[in-house]
Length: 89
Image (tube, rainbow, N blue to C red; front, side, top):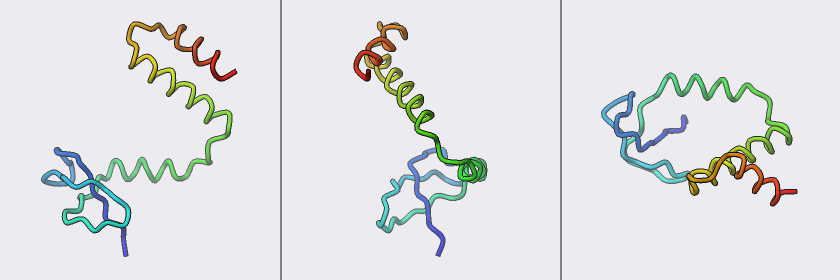
């Protein structure tokens, strides 16, 4: 049986707009229609090999620095990188 997907996109390109949140194991009443572009991107990503530990560390560093800069907009990237490096090393 195919998995039904649900979303909270109000301008759902697949239909009239979905309002249900996806939760594993729950039966929801309004399934989201397909999103061909998203499905194609997800299929392409599944073909890629898993990230290496080095790639994960680079992604984590970037994400944490970005979050710091969102929380503290006055902070420069160099300052955020210095803080991250001082905590993680």
